[in-house]
Image (cartoon, rainbow, N blue to C red; front, side, top):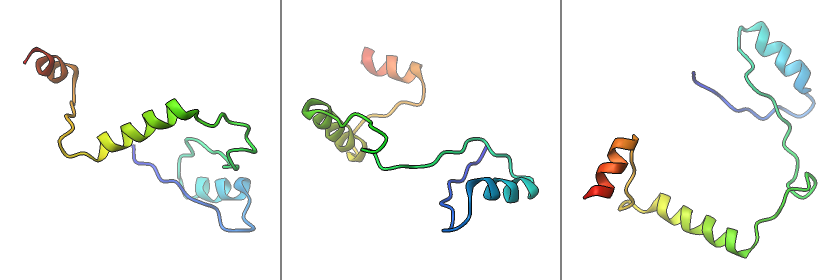
Length: 80
């Protein structure tokens, strides 16, 4: 399944947008309204979590990071 995420134009309600897309035979999988993080009262990461997130970002962007497409590849790498 291919998906698309859109931001509604100002003045167009989510309900109307869904109606239009459904009339064009789009399947609506999920809808959500984004609100500012603090207004949603989500937890803000502590220092340890923030460092872990930064490390993960570095690994993602490092071309030398090993990636595995299945468990067999991972196990084979551990056995090397």
